[in-house]
Length: 174
Image 1 (cartoon, rainbow, N blue to C red):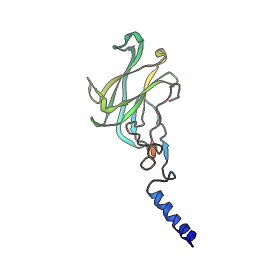
Image 2: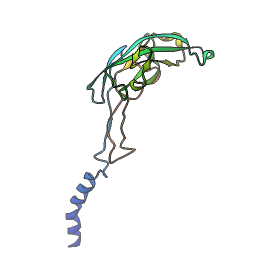
Image 3: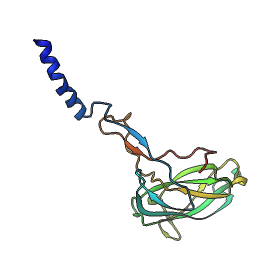
Image 4: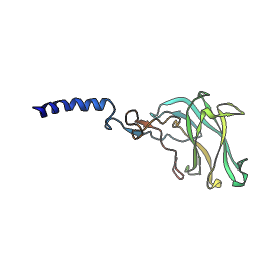
């Protein structure tokens, strides 16, 4: 008789555990598909929906960084965000690429840190690459990198969902 009561209560206990977030069966992580890189991109969230913000590489050139000129040429580029909030907005990966659009070096650029002589949400930054003579351009990747959220591994109860793609590795085709 006792085992029957235990068995009868087992489904209720499992449902309670699942609803409380204690079950790893409900927490799933996924990675968004990387959008098409370009000089001018419409920034999109982790679900591929446009945020109403454009990120644009205005220009770029090779030159020594003024603080470390002895390290040789780096990629100095200017950029602009249109439609972003000045205090908190999206971030995109900027990548120096060769003529075949292979990444030579990348870093994340935050619109909220863009302030320059050309007005709000404009700025400039530097990319260090191993072979600057191979740089054929600078591209932005449209996926918003500003909020990644918790993973299931870090927080099984509140984690999970779609996360932005990883920053491209050197040599990765864009």
